[in-house]
Image (tube, rainbow, N blue to C red):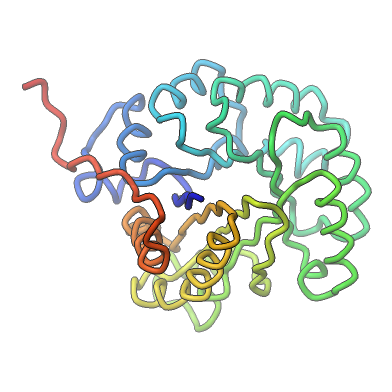
Amino acid sequence: MRLHVGCAMWTHAAWQGRFLPGPLPPGERLRSYATWCNAVEGNTTFYATPTRGTVESWARQTAPDFRFVVKLPKPITHEHRLTGADEALGAFLEAMEPLGPRTHALWVQLPGSFGPADLGALAAFLRRLPGSHRYAVEVRHRAFFEDERSAQHLERVLAGAGAEWVPFDTTTLFQSPPTSDAERDAWTKKPRVPRRSRALTDRPIIRYLGRDATDRTVEGWRPWVDTVTEWLREGRSPTVFIHTPDNADALALARRFHDDVRARVPELEPLPDPMPNEPLTLF
């Protein structure tokens, strides 16, 4: 039984000098982040497949029990829409090999236009994927959240591949009008879909987006504390990623979420002690 928590990135200017030492060289930023959280979203891979050397550096900076949820590149999911991208997929899978067991799941984030009529393409794509990885799929088409038949069809496709459905819970963000520039920007970009909290596998993954105000973020995640506590007692090992519109406090909030769950499940393994945020020196 283990709870992994993390953020959408492992380096952020707002964290330097507050939570993490700064400035740090690129080869040390993930190492420092990994003393705060035990998982991270691999969002950068959506924009470009990294070199194998870069991924080897990620592995060197993290312990074997650290976990990555790595997003498939945009050409595969958004441009080719899961068909005719075997070469790009092969290059991506090869690049990720150095992570080994650190790869918690390969994350297939689909565009909002990918709807129930496209599930045949998803099923065929998942069948072609190697069984050496776990897979997690994020959909944004509203039919999957509002039409029970569409949701059930998607669940059958995912179950056939042992894949998880990744909800992106933005309900707290959209509860009331934005109050900051970052929240206004998030209102224009983030999907507005109902909260979904059903796990399909023993390793559910949650993406939660709060507000820039800490108290509103914490209030909004209380249903997830209940859900994650229940999953842990069922023997599942969930992963939860905490976002806010500006992500300035996301690193500390991810640890706070873990603390809130651990208060309910005392036998849960604690997170590591964070690295001090003083700049590193040679002496």
